[in-house]
Image: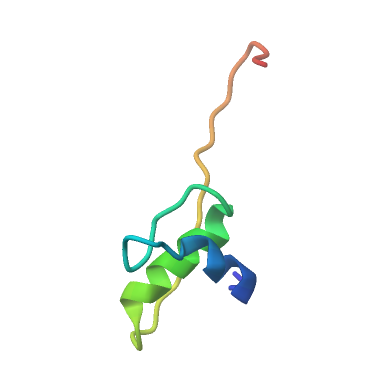
Length: 58
């Protein structure tokens, strides 16, 4: 998963070291994890929940 620098801006905070934000999706999630992994090799595998339904939903 690419970790573009522009998404790092989304986890900056005025009151905390970093923030876990919902905006930016899986890429900001990867940046958040990267802050804790430091030099340890790591992988961010983002797997969305899947489901099947017989009837349509909005």
